Image (cartoon, rainbow, N blue to C red; front, side, top):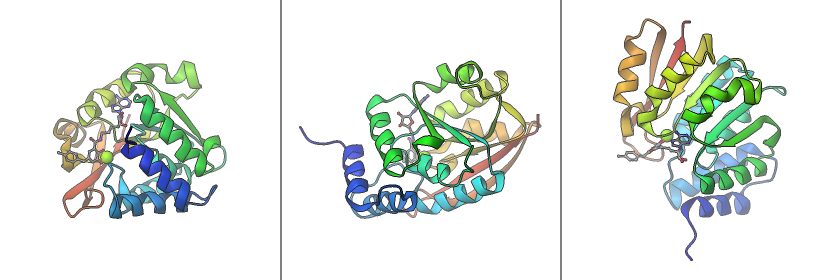
Length: 214
Ligand SMILES: Cc1ccc(Cc2cc(O)c(O)c(C(=O)NC/C=C/[C@H]3O[C@@H](n4cnc5c(N)ncnc54)[C@H](O)[C@@H]3O)c2)cc1
Ligand SMILES: [Mg+2]
């Protein structure tokens, strides 16, 4: 049977990237998506904004919602200090299997815990399961109608602390109107929009960075 796009993306990584070299994995995926098949990775342009926010926050704990093929997982994990931990949630087993191999090819398994399951089920269990009290940075890139409910859930479960940073992909395209309205109008968040483009295209998109004020 015909391979899937994630399988072909993994093939491009294994063919063109150097084992243990996260930058070559990122370049291989961007080249594949620009020249062969578009895929919904945050991409190189928004990826540079992601890099800047990760470097600024210098997080000890990161939560990613929606791993897909692991592109942003690799982008974030490559910038983390030695003892930092990135937990990434992915409920599609086929995508999770691909992402594990992409993360392994980049040599970042030690820094990444990929959890196969739904954010709604796992956010309430972060403390007991992984011994993480709060997250310094959360990257939201899963189904767009889950950004707001999951943010409210993270508040309720107490996994955000004063100063925790939420960084949300696709706030323009596909768009997350209810989430944007919430973080931009809630007194509990200080929000900032980083204008960019939908990965590998000229369509406008952007990232919203929202600091939780406690
Ligand atoms: C109209 C239109 C269509 C598509 C685009 C292009 C475009 C550009 C983008 O950057 C995009 O991020 C997207 C997009 O739809 N992303 C959704 C990404 C989901 C991944 O996360 C997984 N997942 C989804 N909900 C959960 C959940 N609760 N718990 C755990 N994992 C979850 C899924 O299993 C997937 O691995 C689309 C632009 C415009
Ligand atoms: Mg996205």
